Image 1 (cartoon, one colour):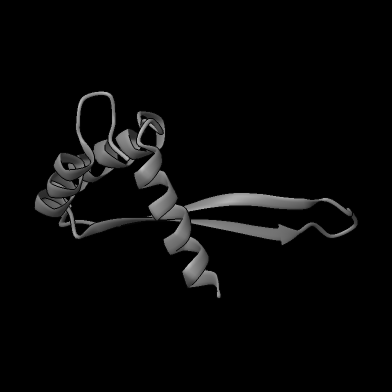
Image 2 (cartoon, one colour):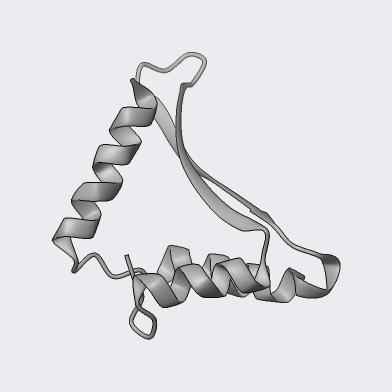
Length: 86
């Protein structure tokens, strides 16, 4: 998935150059006393101290500016995620 300004490849290259990686994980848990589950998104990233601003800018870009227009890429991500859960 790319963003409005960057393709998927450009975004991955930028993340690789400026950080030690960014990971996003879904997390669902129960809430004491309630029947409905609570869902969260956990975002992890690594960078050197001098690149912390770049890391936060890239996390913001990934979370807020992602474009879901490439259906083939989206299917690939879903398949990979499903395979990790099995």
